[in-house]
Length: 97
Length: 191
Image (cartoon, rainbow over all chains, first blue to last red; front, side, top):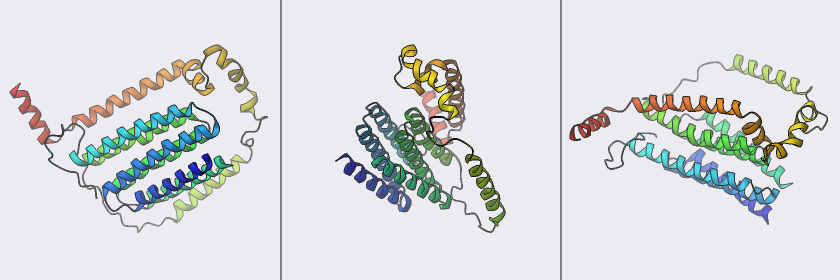
């Protein structure tokens, strides 16, 4: 059961990696890295049950938080070009691709 | 069995990501791949029982350094400067291969991974393994060494990292683009 789950997560990680490698637009890559972070969280959680060490679940939670904050920061940077815009004036998108 | 498979797969993904990072020219995609690389190595650290290292790797590698590098890209111009591939890679390649061979030769003398008779296993490790839990009450021995036995050392490291963070914040925050600075001044005049 857990073996099948971890295999499925690994396959999904491979697909997300492929999208991050090919992804024509910026947002494909951002979605891919977000997906990859989520799959890492899931893999660590499954591995916690697989190896019986429940303290790894805390680490999975921290990864989820880091992933969320990182993606929000990346998106803000892509759209506004800096971290200190308020978000009201959508002025200058950064050219990244 | 399955954790060996997870190890191999994660390591293969790591190698694919590293090769892709080397071969790509789009800096934004490279930074995204750096994030994936950090998540992969953090996952590998977790699978190999080094939870605290994985913690640091995820926080610093996937979290902060991705954002810092993207901020650097936003602050600099000419992101995708094409470099002509006219240089000859043979001398650097030979040097790297020879260094790698020397390092691999050097690893032949060190004890096998997990060898119970290795000096690392017989010298100080038993002390911590026996006394860490009764002396500090921390269930993870590595964490007890970092946070309790070497607490002052860790405190010093935290101070260094904190200082570096302040310096980076000053550098990034100091170079505002003109429009936002003008806006700030206007807001200041209004207030």
